[in-house]
Amino acid sequence: MTHTRHPERLRTFISAMAELIEDVPRESDLLSRGGQLLRQLVSHDDWLPDEFTVPDPTRYQQFLLHADSRQRFSVVSFVWGPGQKTPIHDHRVWGLIGMLRGAEYSQGFARSADGRLEQEGRPIRLEPGQVETLSPHSNDIHQVSNAFDDQVSISIHVYGANIGAVKRAVYQPDGSEKLFISGYSNAFLPNIWDLSKENQAQ
Image (tube, rainbow, N blue to C red; front, side):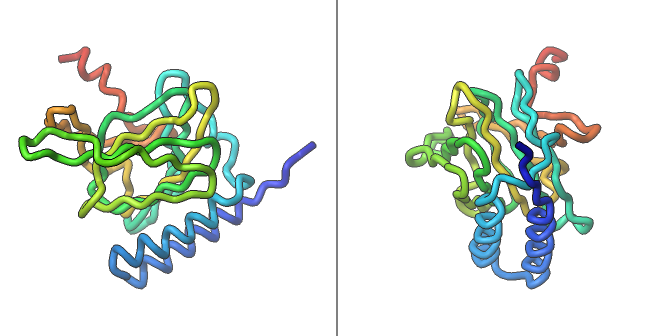
């Protein structure tokens, strides 16, 4: 049995996001209205091409689906192999996370008085069709993980920049940070989440 693909869903979403950003709404309005658009997109799991759903056995995959020509936003599919997770990290731009397949946990962090990072609240579990918002003014530091140890999960992320080219940071629990630029799994750019090679070279 073949399943009908609907790639027009992504095209429609991209056009709607571009129009929304063109209106230059306040960030709160953009996250609210953009979240509604993303919720509509991830409520259907029939549009993402197979080549953007392939996991890697050693680390998560970050596939670029669209980068706005004016660098105003980007759309990325995150493919989580069983049990995979990110370091604690930030974004430094607004973001939207929509769950397409499987489930994931997002654990927020905040700085304590002594500068250390502490977990902020309980982990947020995203199920298919659900959306989480991120803002550099409030909840920008988190750690994301696949909710399953035995299956792949896929989420669709939208950021207020070409996120693969943004200089941002990963964090240690003591609050120290290390700058990185993530790149994309499907481009000739380094994936800096994997710091093992750099650490080995030092």
